Amino acid sequence: MIDSADEPAAARLRENGLPQLVDLLYLAAQPNPEQRQALFASVPRPGVGFASIGDLPSPRLASLMRQIEDRSLDCPELHGTLSPEQAIEGFRHQGQYAPQHWCILRDQDRDAGVLLLAPHPQTSCWELMYMGILPAWRGLGLGRELIAEALRRTLRGGAERLLLSVDARNQPARALYAQAGFSQFARRGLHAWMAKQDSAARDREASTTTSRI
Image 1 (cartoon, rainbow, N blue to C red):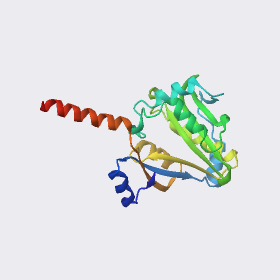
Image 2 (image 1 turned 90 degrees about the horizontal axis):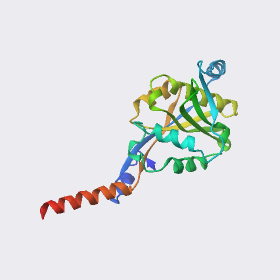
Image 3 (image 1 turned 120 degrees about the vertical axis):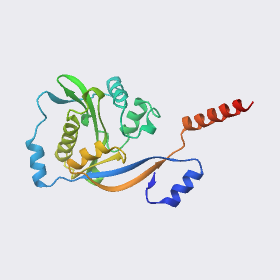
Image 4 (image 1 turned 180 degrees about the vertical axis):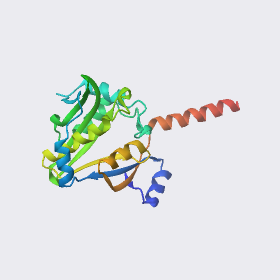
């Protein structure tokens, strides 16, 4: 992970087999007193609520994350790289693990989305590690419900700012975050060697060789 403006470093990584997979924007929201008052005065719309995921491991959470990945615009190059179980384990070690703030969004008594938050007490920030809406519930305004709940929990937890990262190409998510008061404070490129890409390259080479025989 490097600063997106550091082209010399990016070139060295590419030359050594680590292409850039995604450009990430790092965003922060720090609600002012008026915004805080509006957040605390608001409540989820009728039929919408949040339920704790409970103890890990959670097959329910893993199943929801698998569904959320379908047609997601965030980091499609990384889809399938980690299993939901591996991703969950990574999130568990990110920041301060707070299982009460790992939530399932419920709409009309059905699972519709996921929200995973992590406090960072040493910095007076919380992190929105993961949020997503199941395909059947997209376009219904539930993303705004997730963000509002994340901000309310952050403020109630005594933190001042909520941080997150988003794929720079994900325009719908960026617009949603901008409406919620998030602004960019950093931009970084993720470079990595991907085994499946290397395997695909070998397959293409083998196919070309065979066609020449």
